[in-house]
Image (cartoon, rainbow, N blue to C red; front, side):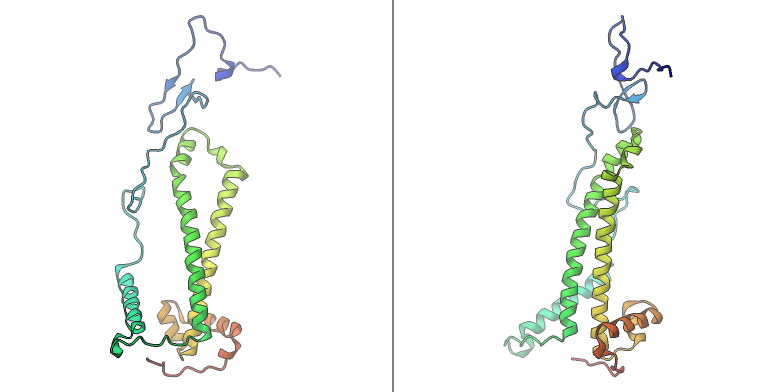
Length: 230
């Protein structure tokens, strides 16, 4: 097969008029080009235009991503204030209140909440790395290097990493919900009340109750009663 002459950087024929001048592409990403193709050897290392800030990163639309609703944050803050108030014993003349003895299900809530927090931190870091690679990825795609991402060491590793930590986080969330369901059963809540508390259907609540009773068989005989109020 006859080799077709090309004009790549390392195969450019000698020019009596002197070396050809590499052109600078006028796109927003910018790269040196030879005959319209990226000249990666001559191009300087890519420098992203993204600047890290102390505040939340904007979306591509310019809007700011939102987290929990303010109402949820206020409710959680109220619970924390009440807990600190009770544990400090302010209602008892300044004498510290004895820490209540936790049930086995409440201990599991503590352990599950800690696991959920650690999984969230792990996921947060992986997603931060994913966001940080946006500029680099976009530059590669715009330079015609999309297929460079389709290798196990890049696309495969990134996909597996994100999938694993998302699975870890979802598993921790499920464990946390299961522990709360066990506490709810121990306090006499019905499937309807549990569904209302978690804002999901009664059918899904029933499945959680079934799983909780399988995990903690002693809860199988618990009948809903009027909830205890401290």
